[in-house]
Length: 111
Image (tube, rainbow, N blue to C red):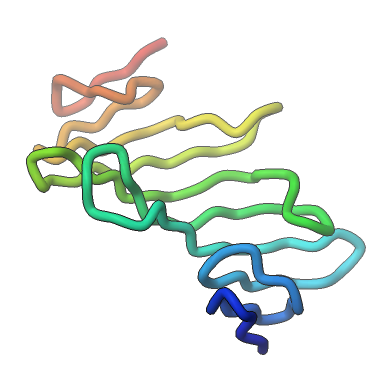
């Protein structure tokens, strides 16, 4: 374990790129990173990002909590299918969007 000059913590890595980076070395490096944009305001988020590669260059997906201007939050989930894209979101009122980042019904499916 290491804590670098920026205060980032690395477990299984000497060069943590986020506040917390957990890395598993094998033929390719798999990492789990805690990521946050640093505040509780509209457009800010905190979450877990899954990456692969020697420098975490390939994003495999994420789970994140998105902050809204009214103080509420939504949860979003992304997976990799060529590129990493958000696939599902749960709105502050509990609506679930699949392929839709602004679900307006309890289940809102795009496709």
